[in-house]
Length: 139
Image: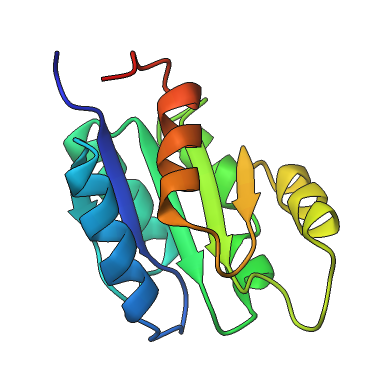
């Protein structure tokens, strides 16, 4: 079976690299074909990489609290680039202040993201949801 292709990286002006590195390893170990864009990644770079690689999903991380601003309009840009329906995930410290996880998820769904994960989410959870959402068979 062909590996599912995913794009990961840290969006916007965020330079927090540790979580990105952990996720990169977890997704590789889980059998995904990972393109890791690193830190300080604008929306357009995620989208260009997804188009170039034929990605199945884009996973955006943010830890500095400005993810909501950085992610606004991303679904529309994906649609315009021919990526209509691509799976979009966001994870990390996605908003400023203490906001309940269900409220964060609601906000990100309004932005067109399929899922949003709070800080400290075990990478195994991300892998499980990704496999489910990409309709992959369990190994």
